[in-house]
Image (cartoon, helix red, strand yellow):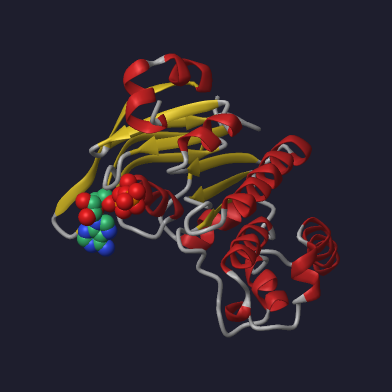
Length: 235
Ligand code: ATP
């Protein structure tokens, strides 16, 4: 059994569906990447999985249907780093982390996790009392990742974490995501435009085309596929 099992996922905005029946799985401890052109439905998929959009179809985590309430999805073990970061600008960095832990009650564990993510992202410790809105784009993305991890997810969804960040910042962020996966066993489902970077991180790749999964394979399969290389890797 896979950690995440998605079958026939349909969702959209209003009357028309944007997702026409997505099937995908993420295994325990796996890094899965979703590639696809602009408008293919990547963000819609992430929102639908996180319970932020009405949807049909099955979404199971560890065998149990996740439902469509965002707080219950988080409590069940899956949290989202939304596109555009979504940190709470007027709250302090520390309060943002506590918001991420809203589904937990173990105060000691929460305090330990705050320290852990401050160790991983030292700039967040330096700025812990500052409003999140004053952080740079890269720092806000680190905060968004740390906040999502505060719920101790089994599966972390990341929607285009590299968007708008300088290449050096992106490399650091991806290295950290890889380390979180390797050291904690947290599974990742990452939507990423930067296909080269994404393939370096991915165990498995799902290619989304107009609301459907058109292909699934290993990073190696995708690098070898001429059409995919031309369309997404530019060489
Ligand atoms: P990108 O890489 O450009 O972010 P994407 O693959 O994430 O693309 P989505 O954002 O999921 O694509 O959008 C899929 C389709 O849904 C597009 O046709 C888009 O115009 C439409 N769409 C997205 N958000 C909304 C919305 N809030 N209301 C109506 N239509 C929307």
